[in-house]
Image (cartoon, rainbow, N blue to C red; front, side, top):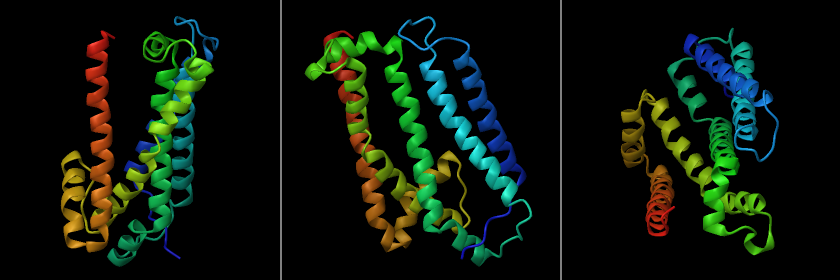
Length: 213
């Protein structure tokens, strides 16, 4: 079984920060009622806060559990980074956070007028919010696929000593598969998913400009 990585100070700081931000969103959310009034609706802060707070608590739990773990040797550390469970967990957390944050923004009352212009009052005979949620869920299917393959590459790079700065992430995604043939398919999938959402973004911009939205 792969040993746990010993908790570092930066792990504590990140987890505490995420928990506090999530708690702040939840606090804002409980100050107002749920509903369709744009001035008082708190659905989005509750959703975003709930996701962040849950991730933060899970991180703090891991920090407490691993605070006395023995320091790992380089080979053990590399094995820990490449653990499939770590890749799967990172994929789930990333996908849920992205999905929850964007969906809560799309379902916020401030976004509903735009949705009405695009889809109509009752698209396909369904309530607008239900249709938007289903439509966005369909568009979100590639997110976990792209995230899983991205983390396969990034964690392999981390096992070789690379970090997670913006520049290092880009370089890892582009260069790491070149020295690991089993990751080349993952790189193609990541680039494909990224291209899909980039095309979707530019398509929406063009559509909104043409419709005057």
